[in-house]
Length: 106
Image (cartoon, rainbow, N blue to C red; front, side, top):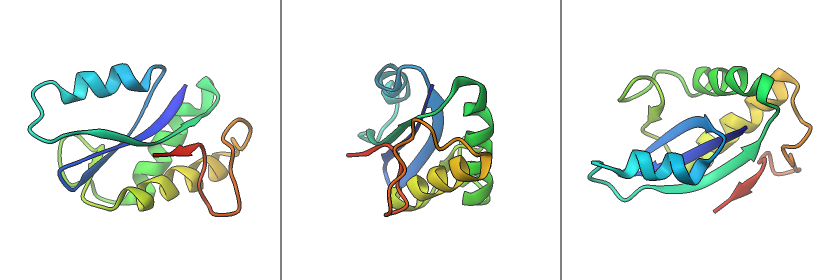
C-alpha cells in the first residue's frame, strides 16, 4: 500500500492507495484544479490506515472535503507522512532519509 500526497489549487491531500495513479485519475475527474502526485511512499498494508490517520492528526484540522485535504505546502504534508510512519514504527520500505522525507518526491 502507498501513502501519498497529491496537490492542486493550493491544497494537499494525504491518502492511501494500492495504485496512486489510478487514485489520481479518480480525484481529477470533476476537479477544477490540475492535480499532481508530489509524494508517495510504500508502507506495509496492515499499517497503512494508521499511518494515514496519524499523518492527518499531525496536519491538524483539515480545510476541506472529508478530512484529507489541507491548505498547506506539499513538503509539510510529506513530512507529516514521514513523521507518522516513524511514530507507527513502519520504517521498513519507506526509504526514510536524513532529510525527513520518505519515498519519492516529485
